[in-house]
Amino acid sequence: MAVAGGAAGPAGGTGAAAGSSGAGGAATGGGVRHVSIVLPDGVEVGSANLLPIALSDDGTRVAYVGLRDGKNRIYVRTLSEPSPRALDGTEGGDGCEF
Image 1 (cartoon, rainbow, N blue to C red):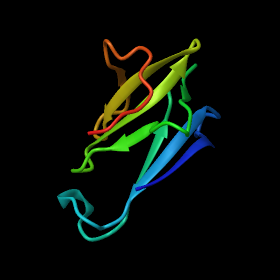
Image 2: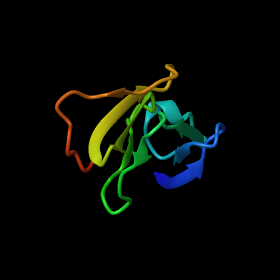
Image 3: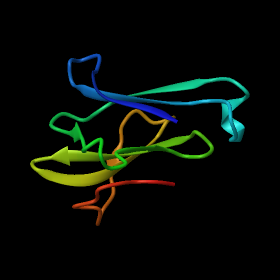
Image 4: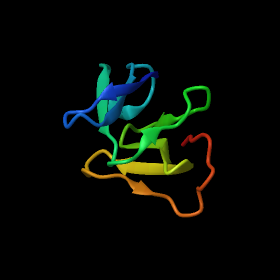
């Protein structure tokens, strides 16, 4: 998986992108998939030294560490939905995986 953080989103907000090559996972269909994430207002991607973004093996969900008001939380979004949700109990989280 390739990850790039800090890209400008369509509304000028901070965003991130993750891509998955065709190696493994039923959702890849033998090709390359690209995912764009526009973060909620006031949220930044956590440190790139951690594991700030994860794409589920089936390619249907993305999770990321978001920094808001100086605190990390883990957010998850099903790619068929427009908005992520913060996971309860993940305050201080510094990495995510599926």
